[in-house]
Image (tube, rainbow, N blue to C red):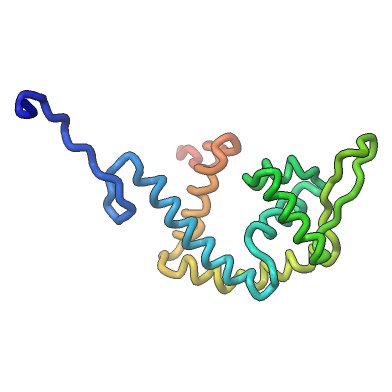
Amino acid sequence: MTADVPHAAAAPRATDRPGDQSPFALGLLLRRAHWRAQTVMTEALRPLGIELRHFSVLIVLVNRGPTVQRDLAAATGTDKAGIMRVVDDLERKGLAVRKAVPGDRRVRAVEITPQGMELFDTAHVAAEPQAGRLVSGLGAGEAELLTDLLTRFAHPQEAHPQEAHPQEG
């Protein structure tokens, strides 16, 4: 009976190996790249006593200034309970503080401390050799190209095609 059923063309099977032509290939490659980058950056942060989840909150605080917890959760892709644990950790380490928001006694904004800013800067210095190791297999200019492509991919609403590909002429 199965011989009478027309067979659809075999769809490429998803793998995460080079040459994967499946519709999942890009997502799988991005996942593998993320794991690799996360592992390398975790190594850079470990001696500083923080994890990537802490550092991601510090990044938001440096970029935005004092930020309420719900906005920190949204910016870092963390749930409410998770962001509370991270902020608790940062407070315990003296890297951030919660402060009352004028006009709303129930809401607290999280603010980076001078010690947090110092650690933030130290983390960048510590990550430099690790970041170099991460892209060591790329050729001249490829790390910058990869960064540009991923930036445009991750932030399509902010892409400026005219700047990225000026017309010749």
